[in-house]
Image: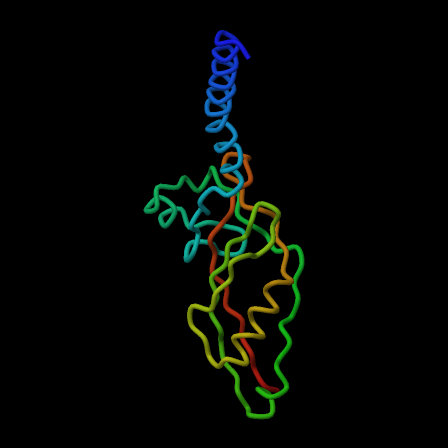
Length: 152
C-alpha cells in the first residue's frame, strides 16, 4: 500500500466520522421529541377542563391545551382478601398519560393498603385516554388519579 493511498484512506475515514458526528444531534433531537417531559396538570385538570389560574401559575396557557379525556374505563378488581378483611378506602396515584393515551409510569402516592394499592395500579393500566395536546400537538401529561374501594 502506498503512502499516498494511506492518506486518502485516513481522510475518507475522517470524513465519515465527521458526517456521522454531524448527523448525531439531529437524530438525537428527533428521538428525544416523543419522550419530552410531560406537561404537569396534576391538581389543575378537572375531567375535561383545565383550571386557568392553576395553569397560569405553571406557565401554561389553558386555551392552548386540550386535556386528556377518558375513552376506556376498567373497574379495578377489588382484591378478595381485602374484601374479606373489610379493607376499603381511596388510593391516590400519579401517572403519565403518553401521547398514545396510555397511562404509564404509575406510582401510588398515597396508599390505603398494599392489596388495594396493587388493585388500583392494575385497574388504571387498562384505562385509555385521548392524549393531551398543546397547540394541537400531542404531548405526555403528568396526572393524578384516585381510585375508591368501598364495600357494599
